[in-house]
Length: 135
Image 1 (tube, rainbow, N blue to C red):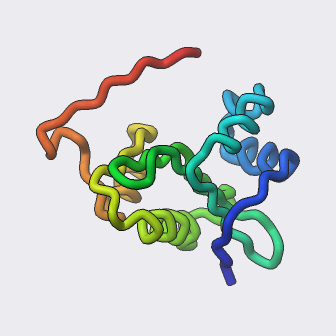
Image 2: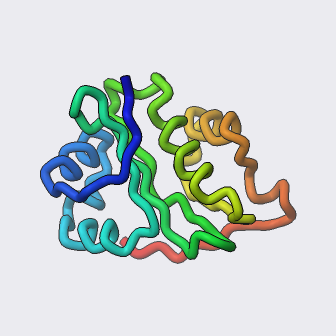
């Protein structure tokens, strides 16, 4: 049974989880990732039998805008409702927020996930997305 709760940062757990999904740009600089966690508005974790199976990390002001920075689930536990439960927990926590934003991979799998969760592509709101990406 999956339990969703506030996450207390554990560098070894975080490194293992992020590595499991191939997010090396994060794990190559653990100090920056640790600081990112510390500066987050909310970090929730999914546990199953004491094992970390997923994390969602949100940034923003919690009132007018919420940005889903990271949502990841161990590959062997994906498609079991864990990501949906994490996303629902954050959205329930910040019901008053008018604008929830995320940037994700342009794949059918990720698009299907977010569309099923009630998100829409920014163009449907007459908006576009701009990014400045530093490698």
